[in-house]
Image (cartoon, rainbow, N blue to C red; front, side, top):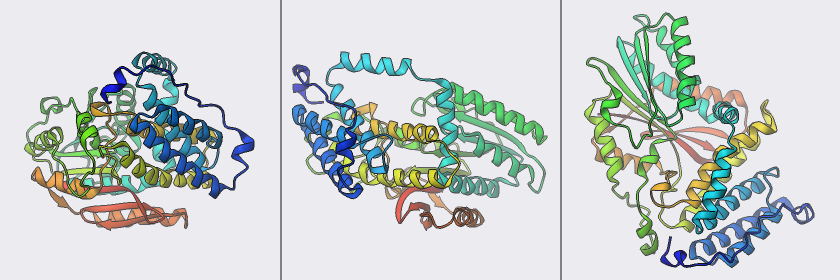
Length: 422
């Protein structure tokens, strides 16, 4: 935030009014979509430069065309407009804190649980990723008798229950399995433990559960309690990028043009990868968003974000058209995605943790730390392809791309799955 923000008086009224049905429907969907994109980009430029009066005017016009219950472009625009408004309000810490405290007070625990369970079910690409992850792990560890899996933030019972089931059918019978899950969400940790302990008991599998109620940034090697002789694997699903958060607010004001081909060194990420490598894991498996949202300038990552999340919202439309989900499920899911957008647009410095990067940058980061790309299990990729074919021609596609695979929506890469060895 620039130095002038500390002296600026709160003389701007944000005009996030209810959408006007007459104005929203006076355009054809394609025309309305183009207009919304232009308004969003203009608003981002004004918000970035500190021209709050013009930013407010743009937000008012966007609110007349966008809607959280409209078509995919209207819903996407509503999320980005909310993020821009949040960024502007942060210029007045007292106002922002009061509004944010009110939001936190109204958060419903049951809603959060439902949102977390809806996510993997309503996004077919998660089924693809899970199939590849579990099959690759089982193939690599089927002859090991003591297995330790460290889940770096996913905490999804669907993934790990399936993994235990596949392991129980191994050539030497059920091995001893320890699952460590790292998450700041204690409810998620408790729910996962309940499911996995019950599943292991039904499989007659020796099992240990080690919940770690910490963030990935605060995780230490001692917390993992890795024992001698354990076959160790780390799995991160849509979470590893939080380690890239850094205090880059100064760079934001002095960087004119970024070299998008350069992968800037990040000390926290480098230290974390060094820690993982020191434990000699058999595998490190990574699922990440395939987009570059780790750009210093707001406008640059805003453009990237619009392109990326338009594919996500389009895929949500298709999924909810053919699936058995309610409109409440869709809103919960889009609220989760909206939190990513909010963090990417509204936050800076250490607070901005949604710093997604493309696979080419992850190759550089892992290689610097001494890791080598490993092949994903071919049979798992075939299973992922079968899942896609069972859905019919709706737009999903899996493409092999060293060091792993890309999950695409109408030729637009949205997620990557990669495997790494020491």
